[in-house]
Image 1 (tube, one colour):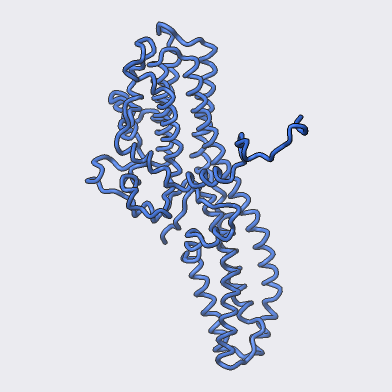
Image 2 (cartoon, one colour; image 1 turned 180 degrees about the vertical axis):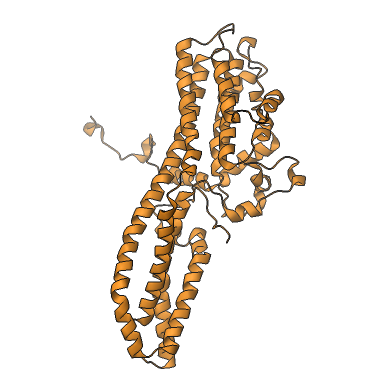
Length: 420
């Protein structure tokens, strides 16, 4: 069965609940195979009861189902609450680790800017740490990011050759060690003071701790029996509710009245089933927060002729990034993993870009490859960020944010005599 289309971030306005109920995400839920299967099951049960059972038989079975239905409903209510809560906890653990890792990388950039006077050395440290960040997320995605690091001027050819050595240490681990070596190099004409090295060493270590926590969380999922029991319970719940609605109040009616009764029963079951299935699908989404949209990935997979480079974490989105004008305005493609590697890199490049200008004094100029111009592919990806749901959420915040330093003409008039 095809995986449902899901992304890490889906934009919505908290103050407009009706807009959320009519979004494309809700429509995807309505056409989900599990939900459609439950509706088909109910129609079979309801039509079978109407066609083959007498009122007395239906009433007797309904009485037998009363206690089991109450028990199953109670169990389902409690179990789905605990299940969603545990899945949400895992989601927040992932999110918190990713955010702390990103923050520590930015902390390191500030420290390097302030403490490392040799600008080439400073850019080399950030180059290697951004390469380590790329490679770490590549490991999480099961993809080799060395070629992407070469394209983004984060690795040299010699460094890439060393990292490709079979049986060597994890590439991201090795690259972060190189960064620490460059940081602690006391042979420079103006070496970094040791107490500053210790401060930056702490940022690197905390980045490593948080970023490598992501695959550790994934390798230790919620115990399978817990997940299996949730699946079994929701299946039993759907079947019991279907029989209970089909049998309840069954009376011999004319054809028109019977059709109307079946329609009303179908609407009632569809509403209950939509709620229960939505809770379950929400839980499975929270269990795998890094999964991408299946349909987007399938539609946006470029050919080797289009790129001429190996497919990687970002390259499945290049075709859309380079053809943004052809994409409908309401369509967005979220790139959650790319945010955590490309946006820090862009911020760090801008922080040091003045040191690569031709008019920069030689003593302050950086000769690092870190500040070379971006490849056209990456430049296109940068422009495509404004089409993502995450960017839309930021725009919603901007529109609803409290006023900062309002214009005097927007303030109420206070007579001079009443002013403090």
